[in-house]
Image 1: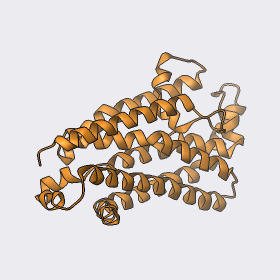
Image 2 (image 1 turned 90 degrees about the horizontal axis):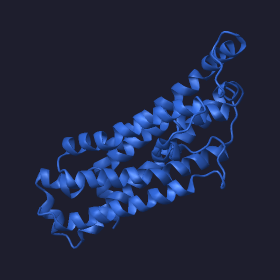
Image 3 (image 1 turned 180 degrees about the vertical axis):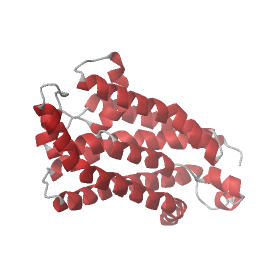
Length: 263
């Protein structure tokens, strides 16, 4: 089993390194922008003719809200979701394209074990990516002399991972159904990425306006972010239960289809 995990790691280590760089850039940029954005919001709020959104006092006075909004409810979540999908790509399908799949299938390892070893590595890499973001935020916040709740960051990280496992399962299913690195990636981004980004942006706008819509039931991105002050009672448990159910269903379909593929 350890060799399977190591093999999956070798295949995805370049993607993982790229993910670390992307996460660092996003976190550092948003931390560096904090003082400028707060000053701009303060000027608007003080101006009788300026913009007056309900979230502005939080943005001005709560650094924790700022981190949640720009990282877990926006850019960090998007980067993490993209790389979680990328980590799920590969395995026997990729080896078939490279001509080495017969050697792998000749080993005394079932196809299901191949699949779950890859998914385990994808999940571990996704967790490592989100934990690395916390390290960057801790160091960056100390540099600009800002404090925040580390407990809240850990809770939001756990929620993002718990809801985001669906992305890993979905990406792996698309890779199994549509062999080929580029075709499966494009289809995954079209089928999942485009609606995810559009709905995230639209629902954020609706919440700022204080409006609600039935599309909120499908706001997967908001479920990954949760409320900015997260605790046991405010966690989106119903959405998580639905997400885990869909994840289990996707994995079951992937296993059944993977057992029938003619390599």
